[in-house]
Image (cartoon, rainbow, N blue to C red; front, side, top):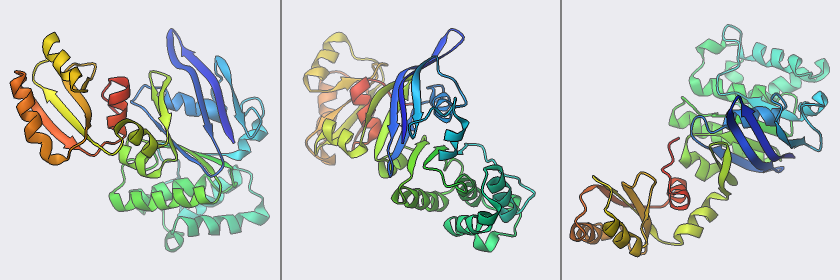
Length: 308
């Protein structure tokens, strides 16, 4: 439904995107991960047709959304900053956004009622938006982008600033949309959210795709059924100490202070590893064994600590 091929974009002398490939299929939820400045917003803008790439091609249901404005009718977009009229009611907001997005007058009332039902805001329809909780506003922002019945929905940090219960309600809505056959592309800083929601995750670092795949498959590929050992030292190991750590299948981050690796044992192995590091003469600042996650995979594959 959405395909970006070899997308590159420079801003001045800085390469913001470098030969990025990304696709979203019908009924698939893809999560784009990366630190601030990685190029995520530029990539979303390119996918929308708002930003012209310097190289590469964008296809939205077989059409270029930049050169063919009609193609953009297949796209819904939910920005990180709430795009709502705070002094109008929930229903008035939906009516206005529906008309702006070209919903026929004959269909508008039904679409608004569907949006209220999907967002579970029926009892708040007459309330001003500025009286709603953060989670309610987020849900309203999402359903407002769906009034024209797009095939692809892009969301930039859809759960930022909401509490746990509100986040779960939004997750339920996203799962429902996926089950309805929409293609979903969202950015998030929440690795737990990415693990539980995503069919695929794409790590975008310095404008490049560094890692991509299904979350559980990526984790199992690196750690199999083991745990992750994570050790942070007060000082970087000497070359001789580093050699001993590498011989134990531990891998360093670029800083040289954090080392990680797969361990076959359980949480009770912390004491044994503490003895190993003491024998090697390494002062430990932090030592833990944990269930591996997407951050673990990223550190293991790239040697970088993921700072989202």
